[in-house]
Image (tube, rainbow, N blue to C red; front, side):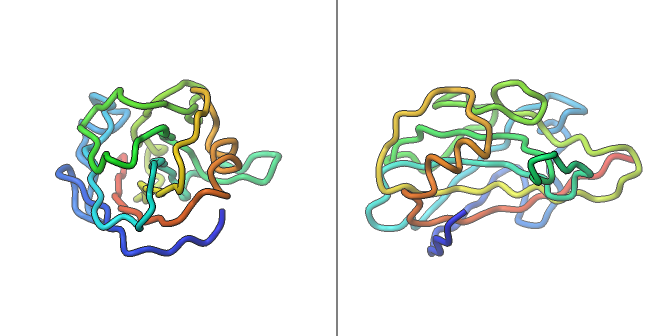
Length: 159
């Protein structure tokens, strides 16, 4: 992915940066996406994309991709700066379960603490993209338009 530093900040009502993701947002419970909000987007932001990725997942694909993709959401207008818990708005991509939409943390039992990165990427234009893109397909389409990004990191552990 291209380098797009910005002063944008991402936060959630559900957990603090570096804090534990609540069980209701995991695959062990209600499996609802957490609330996310962002502030101070770069000037010229016309759209946003949101990604949740677990780099600690013990998964490497034949294509050299690693970790586990839990969520790709895009088609978010530049006027939006917040996603409600469990949102079904906007355009959902395919997660690594092979389904479209959000799937919450559920690392292997006893695998330790996993880190979940919720990225918000600001784009210089609103792109018309089909539903069901994988993270890697999405990144290929949006990378030339990324003008800023920031993240919120949460943790989860199954015992």
